[in-house]
Image (cartoon, rainbow, N blue to C red; front, side, top):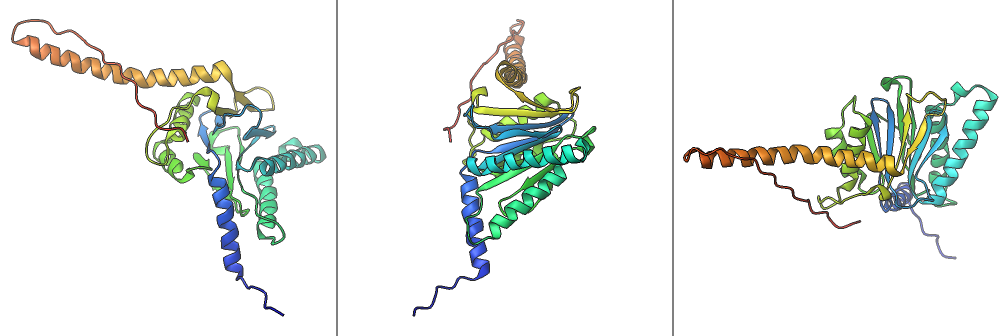
Length: 279
């Protein structure tokens, strides 16, 4: 009788963690940012049928990366938990903290079970409060741990690089337009340091807006509204550059005409940046 192959528990867990991380890294990134009126979710997702960002309850939303069938099962379970708890007790008793604890138990049980593979998913659960300091954002990795986030968080793809970019530029009190611009800029950066161009058709955007008068604070930003917000940011980024070019041309013209007693005019140099390869 042959001796069964032995693998230490530490090595087995490390292998399962590596397997899950590789699966998550293959997914396109999701960015969640706090802004002055709530929380905005921005995901690179060209599909119009399969959502990575969804509503869970009145003030709670869910975002995920990884295998769609796995995080969709978790989303449905979260909706059922929230509906049952809200119906049994009170709507105010449904919180992002409670939902995150439920997800953590589920993911932790699956990850530590040798009978099935770990889930290749990473989740974000967010709740908007009555004031910015009451907002809650929780990140749940594949192993069921809970990370309490503030300000900004990114998961999937090159999340480490995106998170570093957001940490340096995100600030409290940003408007929705500013937060959306920052999120798109962070998602546009590839692993080689270049930049890509992301259009409205490639993005899935939603908000938890505390200023909405109804109980349900979740709202998707689609179509012309999203295109208008992106165009406003593009125009806002071009105007300072155009003004700087015009001032530089005016100074150069004034310097060249000064000796002849002429009056300098203004010039404008419009140029388009190159976009890197699409991932």
